[in-house]
Length: 157
Image (cartoon, rainbow, N blue to C red):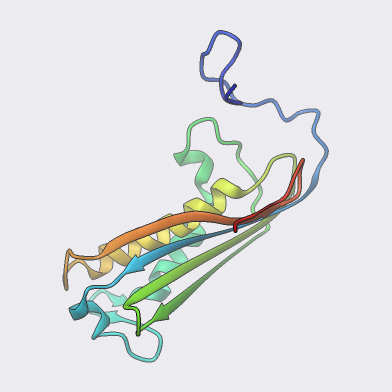
C-alpha cells in the first residue's frame, strides 16, 4: 500500500503527529552531461556565460528549491531545513557535472524529497543558463544516495 493513500485510495498526507523528532539527513545527486561546445567553456571549475557564473547560480537555485519542496510536491510536509549544501563537481574528462545536494533537519519526517528537489532545481538551472550555448544538455540521472534518521537508513549501492 502506498503511504499517501487513505483506505479509499484517495490522496492523503501521511500523519506524522505521533512520530519522534530525530535528526534526518539526505544526500541526492543529479548528473548532467555537457555537449562538447559547453564542456569547452569549463574553466577553473566554472562555466561563465553572459548570464553569469552557471554553477554558482545553480547552487543558489538548488538551496532555494530544497527550501520550497513542500510548495512543489503535493502532500509533502513543510520542513524547517536546517542545512542545505549544494556541491557542483565538474568532470571535464567525462564532460559531465555531478550536482550533490545534502540536507539536514530535526523533524518527524525525512528530507529525501528536499535533497532530490535541490539537486533537480540546480540541474535545471544549469540547463536554463547554458541553453543559449546548446540545447543538447542531458540531465541523465537524479537519485537518492543516502538517507539517515527515522525508521531505517538507506545507502545506495
